[in-house]
Amino acid sequence: MSIDKKPSDQETTHFGFKTVQESEKAHKVAEVFHSVAVQYDLMNDFMSMGLHRIWKHFTIGKSHVRPGMKVLDIAAGTGDLTLAFAKKVGPTGEVWHTDINYSMLSVGRDRLIDKGYAVPSIVCDAEALPFPDNYFDIVTVAFGLRNMTHKDQALAEMRRVLRPGGKLLVLEFSRVYKPLEAPYDWYSFNVLPWLGKKVAGDEESYRYLAESIRMHPDQETLAQMMRDVGFDRVDYHNLTAGIVALHEGVKLR
Image (cartoon, rainbow, N blue to C red; front, side, top):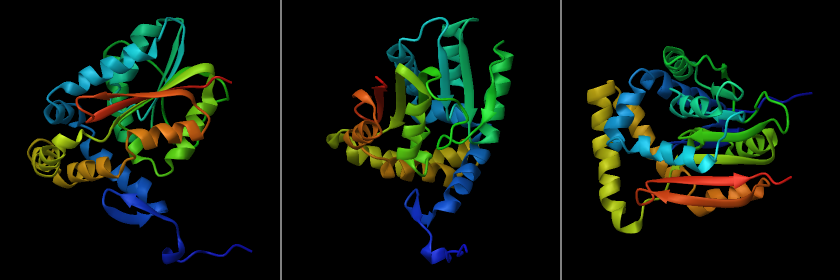
C-alpha cells in the first residue's frame, strides 16, 4: 500500500535562494525559461558583454570534435553549441539538440533550420536520458546543470550514454576569484535584474539566475561530483576570472 507524503514530508531542494519541494522545482525552472526564451540570446549578449561566445568557442575547441562523431547537446536551448558541433561533424556525424524546456527547444530548432541544419531536436530530461548506453563520443551541457534537481543523477546519465573514451564537457557559471566577489555580487543582484526588466520584461527570472549561480557547486566540488559518478581525467578551466568554468571528464571504460 502506498502512502502519500504530506508536503512537509517531501524532499526539498533549492530554487535560487528559496527552498521548494523537489516536485515543484522543474515546473518553476520551466516557467523561467518559457518567459525568457524569445529574448534569451539578446540577454546573453547584454549580460556577458558578448563573452559567452568566447566561452562556447573554447568549449568547442576542448571537445576535439571530428567529422563523423556523435554529439549530445543537453540543455541546448537556442542551439549555439549544437550549431557549432553540426558544422564540425559534417554529414557523416550526428548531433542531438535536446532540452527539457519546449519553448527554448523551439527557438533553437527554428534557428538551426534557418541555418540549414535539420538536426534531431527532442524534449528530454537529463536525469533520464532516452538514449542507449555507450552511444555518444561527446556530451555537452552549457549553462544547464545548475538548474537540475539531482545533478549527480544527471552526471551519471551523461556518463552512461558516452562510449568508452568519450568526453563530457560542462560549461557553467562558477565561483569568481575572491578579489572580484563584491563587484560581481553587486552586478549580479542589481544590474542583471534591471537588464531583465528593461530588455526581456522579466526582472524575477534574472534575479533567479543570479541566485542559482550562488547555489551551484564550486569548481572543486563539481569536479569531485564528476569523479564520484565514474569520470576519469577530470579537470576544469576557469574562464574570465572564474565567472565561468569548463569542466571536462573522460569515460575510460
